[in-house]
Image (cartoon, rainbow, N blue to C red; front, side, top):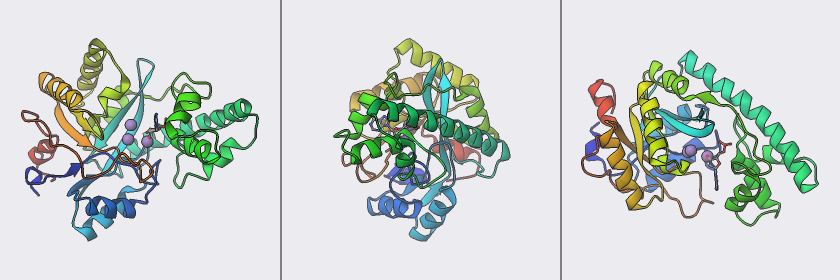
Length: 288
Ligand code: AMP
Ligand code: MN
Ligand code: MN
Ligand code: MN
């Protein structure tokens, strides 16, 4: 496979294995319908959807890359690190992800208690749980419950009023550290990528520091294009990637049809001068 020949490559999206709305098979079918030719499934802290997505991709003629999006704490802030093209059966990686899922469970229980208190009701945890199909509970599942029960008008409002960082039902969590997450991915034969760097609202100095720490741990990729990002941000991130010698990745961060404004198959090409992340797979003689 020669990815440079492809026009729609999407290396970041979610299925019902985490907080996406479509099953891995339905997601692949949707992606194909949107013209996506190369796809990585990157669920939060879990790889349960990868085998099903890979099988569906094979059936529908898409090139498929294994993936995951790992919750990391860096300088007390939540950062997402995407892992791509690794051995899904790697025991150290899987042990690490299992630890994060256990933390998610404890966090969800506390989030449920806080929501019950805040809303003066009971059963928020159980209600959120009905929105989850897989092994993890995400803030997204709580947000969908708040939306459907009429407590908020949009998912965004659920985060702004209750679930976002610093809001009353936000539970501070010490996830794994950056170097550890990068190590899990690279030791499993994959490449680590800093997901949607513009979403953390870091100062330029802090973003440089994040990149330096990430590179020191063996990270090699920066997500230069994330779904619905404006072109100035893309240009800016492309510059960071080039200046720091990072390879560029791109992905929609698609979660499902109710995110009406976000689709698959609509990503701009990587800016000229970016070294695409898939060159690393080619160098290794693996994929694509
Ligand atoms: P968690 O991994 O459980 O902390 O939940 C984070 C997830 O919540 C992200 O991956 C997004 O899918 C979702 N999310 C975060 N902020 C927002 C927001 N403002 N609006 C909608 N979804 C959001
Ligand atoms: Mn998500
Ligand atoms: Mn993310
Ligand atoms: Mn994501």
